[in-house]
Length: 316
Image 1 (cartoon, rainbow, N blue to C red):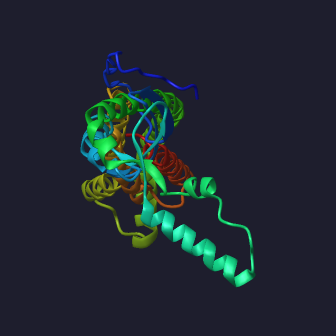
Image 2: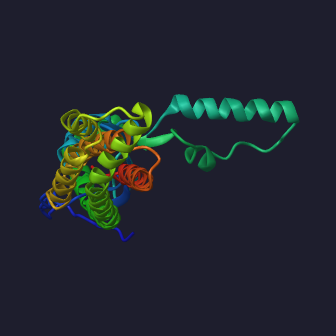
């Protein structure tokens, strides 16, 4: 990714946070240079129920963390987010040598020389390149802290801008797949409604036949038969479940077109849709042809809802 450089005299205008639907998965990095420092910041995010933020800073940069943490919280609502800052000197910045760390490396090198009879002396330049030996001196970083904090802040904003663009692109792909499966749920519900209307009179007829088989020559009371048929029909009536399912689908479609931060609402709606699908399946009539078809369609609805849920888990 091309580097973005910011110099001490330039003013970084923060891009307003986008209101588009966003995925929780993305990666971005940015670079800024000024005051003798080059700051590189990378931001990586994956899905998580809440905001789980981790900021990794080099030794001596701990004072930058509160501002960086607040900046990320202002831009990201959910997800496991890793922010990593690295630096280089690009000018006459004040550096220091951690003598204790250097001495530790030298002691280790000398111990190996004695143990294995190595005659060559440790190379000072190589020692200075080892992790933790050389870095910004406390005095140097303290004197430049305000400038370095501003530089890191602008660099982080640029990284977050890029991260948002990547997450929005991925969310568009998720939206297309979710919309297709949502349309499938609506279509399957309509097919169940047609079968439910068809099965109602047939169900009453089968009930009458069954009662005659059980009672033999006993004359059936038409009023009692109608009452029993009505009770049985009510127990297997799925019109309310289908109406609520259709309502949830419409709400879901509306949320997909809404601004960001809808992931939790979508997840809640999916729980309600799954509950209606389960109730629908529990009410489908026995082994008759229409009942078997309704059961098959109900299982397809559950399957589509579960696939939507897998996608929604990645929406912020």
